[in-house]
Length: 389
Image (cartoon, rainbow, N blue to C red; front, side, top):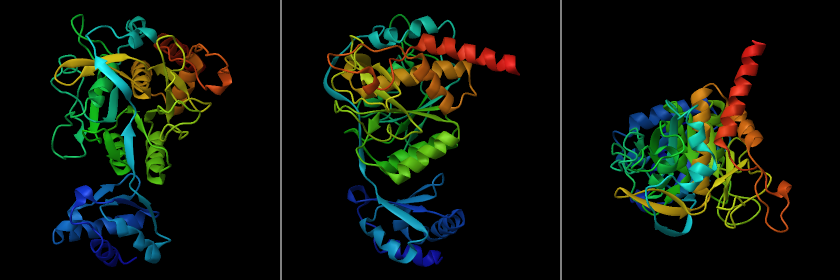
């Protein structure tokens, strides 16, 4: 392959205004060819400043380029490459939002997290939160947040300028004690991965790079409270890589109130989450269907907010953070658990949800997450494995 020619073709297509440019994800099928292209890129970018706009995902052998015309490469390198549009992706939250207070949130109680804390608080479990960042000044989060990464402004802290990521972080691991809020896994360590901007929007490539970062940094669980309607080969490829690396990915199903749901939750390698209302029914806004692995509290959920505040939000985003927190409690006790084993235990220990008129249980998928039942089942499975050994 002519690597110099490859980059010369791309140079002619790279936008001079990368922030507003359409982007493409260029993935190499062959590891050796990717290595060759990577080496040439490193050599050329010192002389060609435009190439510094290119980002890389070693995990899936991909380059992210601000070039709508990158598809022209396929005419010459069709057997070597796959190219896809770098689509936009949104966080999963629905209106209305209203101010909240520092209390023990109803969702944390509903999944029986406080009763589970005598067994596990999630200590030493590393959770990657791919979202809008986090409020590092929030008193309930200051002991839970690690440095993470800011994919939009490399070298800066992943500070939240939207609020969604801080809300997710609070449900996951707030540790405010009696004066503040408590999350599901208060001693877990959160690694905010800022991929979403102030409007709650990101490119697929930012998610790919975020998952890549989580794998490189040996994160245990990834919380993904967002989704898109269409498939992405690059996103699925990196999800598979994380799955094979032993990282559980827990993803929200979407807020369209329909059977079916969004990606990445629909990929079989993820744990798909739907939302429950306060009456323990599937929330009217929640997507549903047999592919849903488990449901979590998602209606009127109070959690941390920007400027050291609190806010109630609804959405499958909120449900997902409850399930990720419960998974962290289990992984603190069973650190070697595979993503597949975690999914099976979450499904097996879920309690039945209340049905609305005309609903069939089989049409909903999984049941309601229960942290206490999950830990008990995990302990039993651990004893059974030890007895066989």
